[in-house]
Length: 168
Image 1 (cartoon, rainbow, N blue to C red):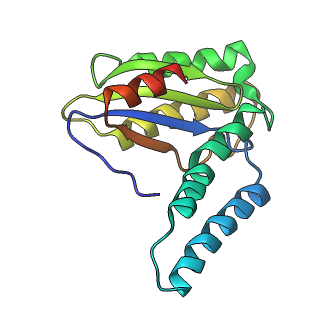
Image 2: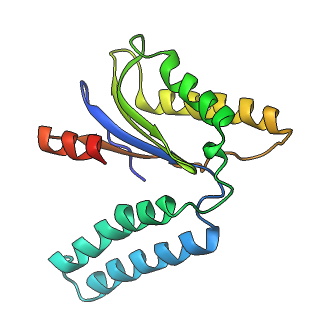
């Protein structure tokens, strides 16, 4: 995904456990998205409003509904694992970023964060995921991928959108 950044922006970031969306389901979603785009391209036209709406649904709402249904091992439902994630999110709050809100779900995490000057969203999210993956894998006596590689991040562009994300 392209990850847009902006000075003084507030972001909604979500990242999920590696097993929260099986590869075959993710690939089905990607095929559906690609088919919508390919149809418009083959017809030599822009996407219709309905196609744009469907793509937005496939990029966010469908994924969120699937995650909220609690697929995968849901390791973040365990208090001792959720605590590791919580402490990681809070560790540099006020130094590298300002946490506005966060929520740890059974198989994914939502964060509303404002990055402070001199730091990058990419580096901060990487540090959260890297630290927690190492710590939790050690706690569980496991190795390998803990988080899905690609986080979702979105610049919050208005007060209305901020309140929507906060309430979500």
